[in-house]
Length: 212
Ligand code: GLN
Image 1: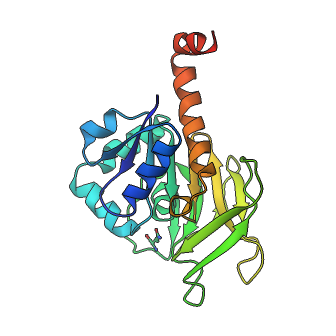
Image 2: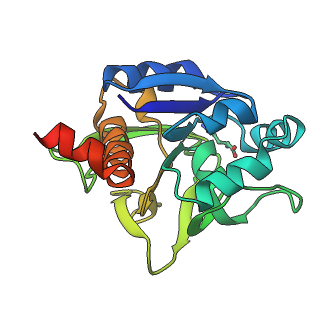
């Protein structure tokens, strides 16, 4: 059973823990480097990315997070979590640090005041079962994605039509929206699957056992 951490410095940690448990993962809160060392995957929750980044520095987690993500630890970021995984930021304080790893430029609070928070039905590549109900709260979008980045979802309609709001690059997934706030578990299911397949490829013997 995969052990999946949720970075628990600030934000909607509980909702992610519940969504991961629904998908059969052992979900644990991560606040310290020792806790990070014990997980097979990590969720970066929605919240306030500047606060989360500052607390991560203060708790001595920023450097270990960077090392872990660059070493291939699967990570999924929703909203503020997407910002934390981005290599480049727009509309952020100049001193805002990120974990990075995702070759994207993310614009914070991109939807502007009129569309501060909204919900929309969205096609999401990589999961079956029809459109996803997406909840956006002071959400970022991906302004630019590098070549190795798969776009999983875009806004449909309105002023932001076509804007990228879900991406995957290898073991990293990010969404501008908050599937943890809806009952739809397909994004978490996709992430748990990514964690499981990395575990299987890291331990071929375990996979042989599982396949038998
Ligand atoms: N606006 C927040 C930030 O920049 C993200 C909002 C969210 O996670 N719901 O960190």
